[in-house]
Length: 276
Image (cartoon, rainbow, N blue to C red; front, side):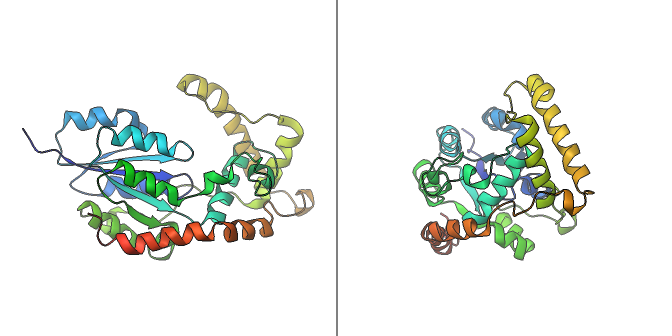
């Protein structure tokens, strides 16, 4: 019987550089078969067909994290997992901006409500350390824990950690350090949020059926982007006043989840050098 291949599984959280890694880093690693997010559902079949000594699978998860990690590791418990984290306040702010971009028009405290927990996201959805516990329960190996700030501060050191963990060399000239997607300004997002609140009223949803998704959700997506691009030329007098996200709310989120963050940092410091 031939030896089983080494399998690496990037379980990216949304808005934690997953798209950048999937487009600019993972495909550029040598001596490994990269299975992109678009082929995630067929990843097990691809691995079973063999032909490579190493495989790297990548997929972006949020609230479906536990279900998907268990789905993959039920078949491949020896998979070595890579996960990135971002500080809670920065992470949820970026998540909210994405939802506004997609037509979510309610204020930030309707997205995450720390007082009564009636928001679109629940308080438990922001707990990050339990995700490490899920990985430890499902995988035979401790995960490689990386941080969004590491990528911003020293991108080559960040890429080196992935390269060393997976045992895959790379050529610097093949990897771009430029962002894959351009971020929209708070000005643009405030204009779109106000427009959707007045005229759309209902948040468009994505669909599993690809044809339905492109015909229905993507048409809304294109229209929203037209508003976003156009609003960059608006005079300030046309822009709704106030912050897109109240800074005091973000500070409260950071303070509330500080113990959770400290656990993650301590875990990474303790385990990243001995991920066996």
